[in-house]
Length: 285
Image 1 (cartoon, one colour):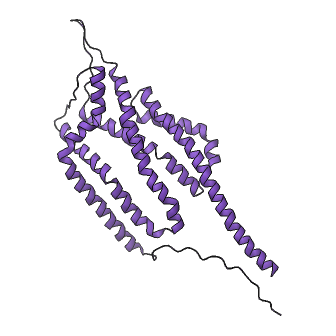
Image 2: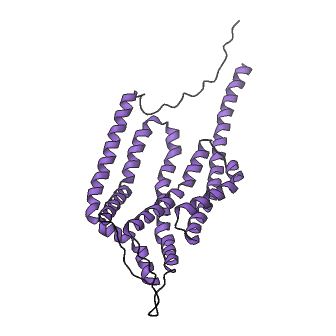
Image 3: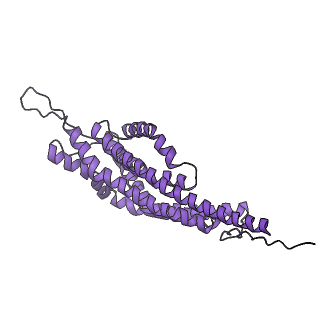
């Protein structure tokens, strides 16, 4: 005599929002979105070229204010024939990339999102919103806090001649070198502030855990100080201005990883209890 066994059906797998696309369609979609992004970048670049001098003056404002406070020649120089022209082109590219970053992010998300499940989108979206906010916070910290202190410190090594036989030592930075230093600082601080997003996202998908982050804290401290010493000007103030916020962000990452790890464990336990209930019904039947 065969008895019917009541088996609890497992929930169907959540489908993605689109059908499976062949490789050529994926490449065509990627090409289309790259064309949109690059076209937007070119439009922004040509719009920024006439404003490159004004943009450079804004970028040079921290140094100009430091020179006005500390003293010295409030000017920059260039030593190559095309240096000033190429610097303006770099400024236009920098401004265009800064303005069109949301467009690139939108196109990237539009390419990736159709292949994700809804629960994966819900997990990733908060990090997508947090990444640009933290990048701008890092850049603002570099522009409004770190650079003025660093320039004042470095300008303090100038020597102004007071006697007829003395020689003045004044800083006259090159326009290209200042722009390179500025962009390095902005991107270094912006990328450094992405650390919580990266670590918490890795903890969210189960690659790392809060315990592993806490156990490797001493190695993280060494890496942070080495990174800060490499990307900042050669002075203690700039290095500490980057290293200290990164240490704070690392500790916040540990807390965030602990929170998302606890939620992931609770979700796994809930799924396991559902599966266990199905087995119990089967065995009792």
